[in-house]
Length: 540
Ligand code: ADP
Image (cartoon, rainbow, N blue to C red):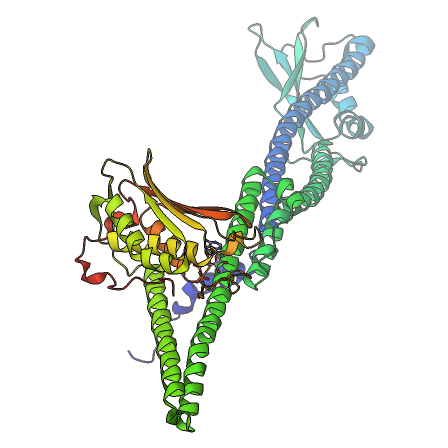
């Protein structure tokens, strides 16, 4: 049967294709969909109302028509009786229908008269009419007379607004019980002219016009409302688009946020909050990137200085300076100092990057903080003596068990004391004090040195930051010492602050909790092999 195509095959695909085509016509935008939905609801409601109204009006007109036809039939009956009475009884003194059930001949002739029938059909009944004369039986029944049936066909044209109804009314009996021989006439109207159809058509037409106007109003109102509803959404979309293209300062305007429904207003506010946070994050990333660039530039600069000095010494020695033993030992001594500086720089950079990257694991021990501080101060004693500065340490009498990394906290004290010595003139004083606090302990390092310029204060903990007057001081430095101090203190869950007055001195205050919590808590209590064997950022 291969190759024979079933004639029914294409039928199923037709509706599917029609549905697909209809789907293409479906409105795409939210505004259009809202408008269509609103209009559809209004149109549906109007349709239901119109159908109900037409149904009720139809029933009302049916009743009206029935009453009207009855009235017409009654008029015909009364007329027939009037003519019959006049013809038989009044003029000839006879019965209209005698007791044998026969209609008087004169009456038959009179009623069969063309003019009479025309009057009955065209004027009184406005329909084809069948009427039947007969006897009224004593029990109220009707006995048709053999010669009493008449038919009148309507010939007159319909009046304006009238139409012919194809129906036959129920026979209506008009009696004359008061006659000597009681008789009656039964009237039936066939295919009458009525106003019912045109009245219904009028009402339907009126309803259609009202419905159409209502629908147009609904479309306009729906379009306006949908536009109003969707304006905040459009603003949101525009803002999101601009944001996606990199305009991070873009927000949804506050008036269109407030103009929308509560949910949309909430969405707009959330969007703005999200954009705000995004901008902040990007700003932070940019700042970090700039700082990294600066940091790299600073590192290169710091490395180049000793390397350039070493190269100069080397060239001078090659060019013959080596022949003079004094110059040679002077150059070699300077080279050694530069190499030491390079080594120190590399050590500090390595230390700082390890601290920053979180690679450093603290060797936390619940040891006496007094011992850690005293040991670090002792190491600086020789340097203080050389510089002619009084270095004192004051510790509480009771042991101060603080969970800390002794080597790193020692490094903090070394850096702070080193700075104190560096920035204090001969004859000055550097005091180190350890105290217990409610949270743990504090280490104060106070000096009577040159103090810190308030303008520089916010930056002194930045890497490579060196105060403008730092080079005037005897010490040299690379601006890494305080950055390392802050990193170590923060890893212990503590904080470092400074108070200083120009020309009077500075006080650095380190607060340490009894036990570090948070990330520091998680660091393994590793062997001290992890810790550096030399104190980084020691004063040179
Ligand atoms: P370095 O001492 O190597 O320059 P630091 O990070 O230790 O770097 O210090 C940064 C800067 O902070 C110093 O250059 C100096 O201007 C200022 N500073 C730090 N400690 C003191 C102090 N005790 N007295 C005055 N200024 C200080």
